[in-house]
Amino acid sequence: MRKKVVAERIFSIASSPERIWRLLGKVIFSSLPEMENIEILDENNFRAILRTRLLGAEMSLKVKGEVIEISPLENLVVRLSLIGPGSILEIDQRVSFVIKPMGKGETTIICEATVDKIGRLSNALFMRQIKRFAQGTFSTIEKRLRDLA
Amino acid sequence: MAAIPEKWDLEYDVIVVGWGAAGTAAAVTAHDLGAKVLILEKMAQGGGNTRVCGGNIIIPKGKEFLEYLDILSFKTTEPEILEVFVEEAMKNGDWIREMGADVQVFRPLEVAYPTMIAGAGFPHVRGAETVVKYNIKGTLEEGKPSERLWKFLSGLISKRGIQVLTCTPARELIRNDQGEIIGVKAEREGKVIWVKARQAVILTCGGYENDPWLKWDYLPVKPVMFLGNPGNTGDGIRMAQKIGAELWHMTRLSCLIGFKAPEYEAAFWIAFLNEGFIFVDKYGRRFVNEAGIEIHEYYRELSHFDIEKMEFPRVPLWAIFDEQTRRKGPLSRGTSGYNRDLYNWSIDNAAEIKKGWILPGNTPGELAARIGVDSQVLEATITRYNQFCRAGKDEDFGRPKEDLRALEPPFYAIQLWPALINTQGGPRRDKESRVLDPEGKPIPRLYAAGELGSIWGYLYQGACNIGEALVFGRIAGRNAAAEKCWD
Image (spheres, chains in turn red, blue):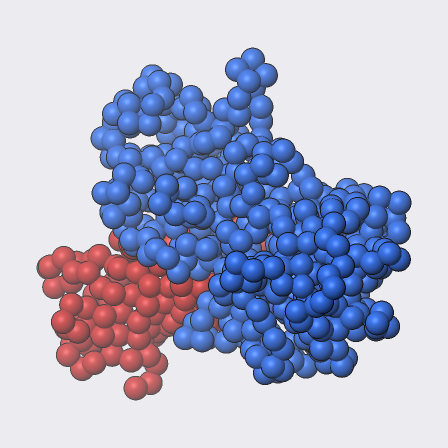
């Protein structure tokens, strides 16, 4: 399957790339209060449980995260595998954050979430909610970065 | 000092006492230069602190690293030693590649409190930009960084067939009439064994993290627990003292915070995956920006001594946290520490609540009663902290706004102690890794490397203990192998 962009958000903040980079990791984690039981396995890998509502029901998704690219002050790319109960949902996602200094104390942040792999049933049942969740998370990240920067 | 035996039980060219990173680098180097090497290891398995540490290795990217170290050392280590360290540390990557492995840059997501950071521990200091940490290249499936490091290092020993005697603690150094160190008295299966060293002895047997008396006497905060290898009981220090070595850096330490369960010898390293926590002293008062402590320097915040009360009011301290933090993830991670292989901390901390390691309370007053502090004080502390969180400004300790989140009930508390990663002191040595006497003269045929008498005399930069162990291990091995045989 070709990768499919499910959410994108580009915004600029009056702050330095250094400050944005310092905040980014913390903000990502704190913008997902539903993500719990995080096990940091090493500097690049973590496991967690994501509690969310899908199709009107509360669900716990198993999350496996791998930082596949990390260039301080420039970009961060995380590969996420999400598995729902009874494998009702299986999805491989990639989330990237690119930081670009724009001069005059402005920094642009480009957030993108793509789906690399998703089953046909999951696609039919959950794609709309996956998009909404990713867009909502990016929106929270933007708001939190603006508050803190 | 042990007398020279009439008969030696074993004869080697070079004896290495202690088998961690420094011992391996020393043994491998001496062996590759033609020496017949024996490693004596007190514990049942090798690795010492190396096996359970963070697994990172310093490879500085420029000679400006020397400026950084000079400032950190606060003139407690001679510049010529630091110069050699910098020069050789820049070759750490080449050495590892030459030995058949490779390295990768350590770039963590810095999300925990405290966290291992990618760069310099003191980024404002000149030369800090040269700090680059690496670990042995590999995937999680190949092990955590320290597991990969130890697999690589121990593999170098087995590939060469270098003999290792485990469960064999060295007890004394043997000196001849010329003052040369010519062997080691050790203990094996309850019997004394005498091991001749035709060329030299290299001490690489770690610090004194698990020696209550040495810690009580030397360290600036009391008591202090440890996170690493329980075998580090100051043996090398005593052996070196007996033959007249000078000691240095004895009051220096690398120290985190840990929880000490009575049924475990070592403490558990504690970190929080969420902003919702504070530290309070024995009386329920905050005392620090909890998010701003350099990871290796916790003892500086905990060593405040109250002259009126004649006590360390921050030892033990209590971490107070809330439900969101409790659910966020395990307070103790399985990435490093001696207990890593002995206990799996539950991912939601529920098992530790059941065990009574973490104490719950629905209100500050209830929690205060559980931990034995004044309920009004703890309530006032939490209320004030929460006000700061809502205002986005910590007026007491300047905790940054991104690290503030108001605590919401139910609350939890865990008792914490200063917990050693390692001590830094031991026999003084020179840039050639030779152990020195109080007059600054080398004790013939005696070398030391690693955590035992390390070069860290004041502030410590993370990833440098392993980096230093490899550097001065190699130097000690090289020089030991170059000694002429005495018999």
